[in-house]
Image (tube, rainbow, N blue to C red):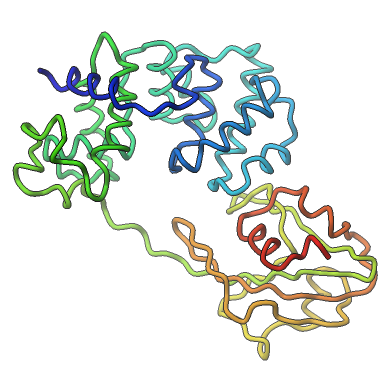
Amino acid sequence: MEFSKILINWYLNNRRDLPWRKTANPYHIWLSEIMLQQTRVEQGLPYYLSFVKAFPSVFDLAEASQEKVLKLWQGLGYYSRARNLHETAKYVAFKLNGVFPDNYKDLKKLKGVGDYTASAIASICYNEIVPVVDGNVYRVLSRCFDVETPINSTAGVKEFKLLAWELIDKEHPSLFNQGLMEFGALHCKPRNPLCNTCPFNDICLALKHNKIKELPVKLKKTKVKKRYFNYLVFSSEENRTLLEKRKGKGIWEGLYEFPLIETAEPPTSETFISEEEILEKTGAIASEISLFNEKPVVHKLSHQHIYTHFWMVNSGTLLNGIPVGEVKKYPVPVLIQNFLEESGFEEY
């Protein structure tokens, strides 16, 4: 039996019961695919359900404020996905009258939609014959066919895409693509794949050559950068605090945080923070300063590790302050949310 037939048969008997599998509505498929980029299904599912409830249609999402979208997205990470999601919703709603493009080529023109997402939507919603290639697919194909070309190289991306084109079931591209992704997620897992019960164990070259642990091959990541964040957590006599909106194209664009001073080296209570620095940064006068956490909170992102200290700053009147109780309404990085929960600051 050929590869695609074995795969589809496995999928029909083993697929998970997920809400986006019960529809071919491009809005829901697009939403799920954007959310599941670099995110496990278990983590993304609650967010998907929350978004569908809050925004039943692409028009609802388009008409929402960016802050509401980011607040619902809070904790899912890679916030550029949420910003692109919102921009695309507005484009589809207001420029395309709520109708998503019905083919791979035009879907790929949407902001935040790359090759993989366009392929997934086109095949699942419109049964277009175009293969998907994601991390799960790379793993399955590299092992089955003993492909050593690095998956994060230009040559690798091209080679795996061509291989997927050769294998795709022309009559059932939707089932084939979903089956390949699901097989990688549930059966041909990164660690401890279920080789003994694998329907491909008689043809899998990696199994035959004892190379399961070696594949897929991935080029080494770029060096991780260390950054040192110092948040100034204000509390005034009127029980108000300060928040700032992050701007620019760096991490967490559009989210809110406490006033931030970034330093080149790890700070200490003896060498860092002064009333002058706080005044220069915020325009507010501090009456008392204390370090909340002696040991930095380490927040790891793909290419940078952020070492964070929170400085509790008591002050007089804050001209641009907001009530402490309203902090919870703002979309913030998970780093800030964890601090709020641990410190109980929102309850002050």
